[in-house]
Amino acid sequence: MDYEFSHRPSYTHLQITLDRGESIVAEPGAMVGHSTTISIDTGTSRDGLLSSAKSMLGGESMFTNEFTAEDGPGTVTLAPPTPGDIMSHELEGETLYSTDGAFIAGTDGIDIDSEIGGLKSVLGEAGLTPLALKGTGTVFIDAYGGLEKLELAAASRTFWTTNT
Image (cartoon, rainbow, N blue to C red; front, side, top):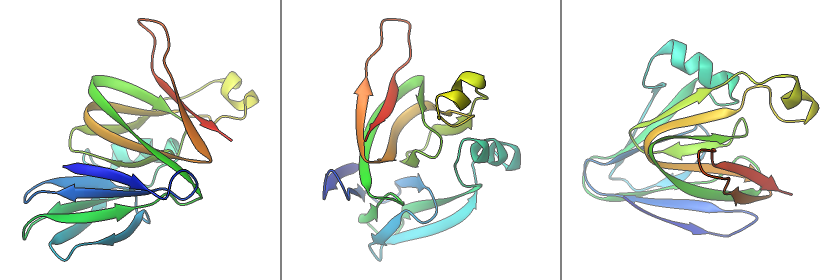
């Protein structure tokens, strides 16, 4: 899989090139277009209805679209639902926390989960359930406005925040 971004930073598009047999999972409504060699399969998240319901708590859809290069290599172009930016992050058996609704796409091996927040989340105007993206692979997140990566001290977590 190769990918590139265009139209940055306000109306970012993500163009993913898949080799035959490769696939990517994306949020419904994110697709701008795809090659004729790409097939689309819509279903619940990989782990069934319980996992899908937990994803909904994190602002994600109960359904996902899986794009697979079946008849040869091809491309899929994705865009966020609102004007803004998209960033990629490589996970290696770890968890990336982000604001709810930020997931746009991910490779196989990424689990979309949510973790219940507390009163501080509500008072800070963040979603009640931060999005937890877990596993190994590439994940793409989006935001209304710009994105900024914050590196925290050792043994801490990596957070993405909007920069609006």
